[in-house]
Length: 271
Image (cartoon, rainbow, N blue to C red; front, side, top):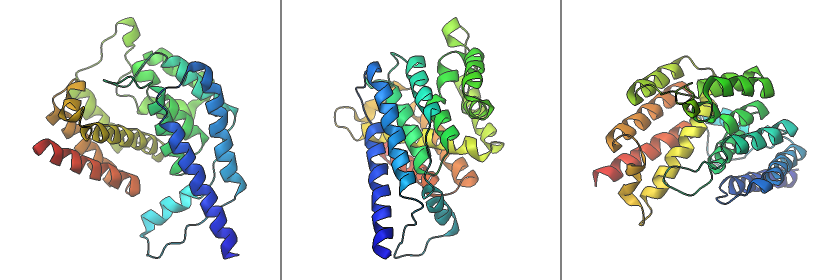
């Protein structure tokens, strides 16, 4: 019996690792997106097939960590709604790349969706993760209405809350001042439900990971801060504020990871 449980757990860990690798693809052509969506869905169906697996550790876990592990042991089945959301996100962000890189923006969206799924999110949360930047970057209120029409109120609610502006920049509408938007976003997190917090946290963690990775890259290093519209001190203030807020509102492994990355980023800028 113990051997069967071990095999189930190993199958799940392998599946998660495969999904992480998929989320980091840096050169995906639009024609490949449908196959990627099908592959993601198959991975999580594989996890469903192995049932509910509990991890056996040699150390005691605090209640919050145990809840996270229990969440991660519940396999999420993805349907064709996820396929459609990935295709929609790729269309909406077509041609868009990550700041200062040639990485297609969809790589970030896949990474955020993967993190949400790894930490027990359901299909709606995974879809919201794929679409979390669509309103802020690509269409404002009109885009939000389209997201609601295509994917429902719950997804639209999360996407709206994860946006720090509803201005349609594609039509020349201007966003509010950076400082005002970030302070308003931090305040909004205080009132956010767990759905919003989980998607937002996954987004911020992936952004922080990307900053740290490039900061450690000898070819980039401190030049990473030139990618942002604000000085590095303001950018770090925002990430420190986010880390503190998430550790307060959604304590657990992922919030702690964000805090630890910010610790390293701050030390790196002081050298």
